[in-house]
Image 1 (cartoon, rainbow, N blue to C red):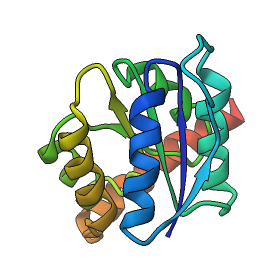
Image 2: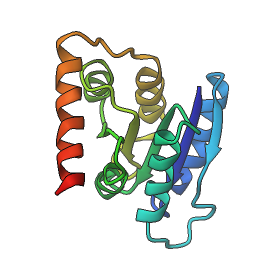
Image 3: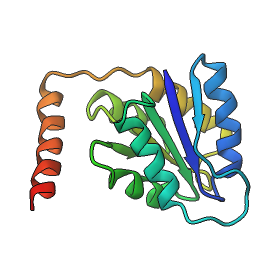
Image 4: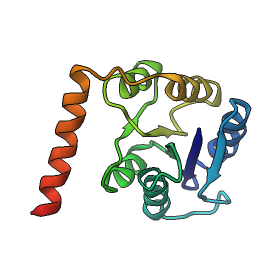
Length: 150
């Protein structure tokens, strides 16, 4: 898979670490910044990750910040993104199997690198179950379409 990744300054070190993890898992990395631990506003970076996923330039995305919350919110503003904040293994599994999340958000000030490795590997490997969950994902998309028309 092609994985787009982006971080703000708080997530920079974890991003550098996860770029290597993604590559070691056999995936291609598309690094969309930031490129240093210097302060940066995160919304444009997270939007770039989301847009790469929606455009098909990346199969999935990863966004990182201090808590991961603003990063998730920013990515979710891109129509077609289903970003999930996953700071534990259970939410990572459910975000993929039940919600078909296409962007993973994590908080670098919350999740230690070893746990982030586990969350990422699980999230990349977990399939979407479909079935009754597809109806719910379709419902999320329907809301998005309604909001675009309003």
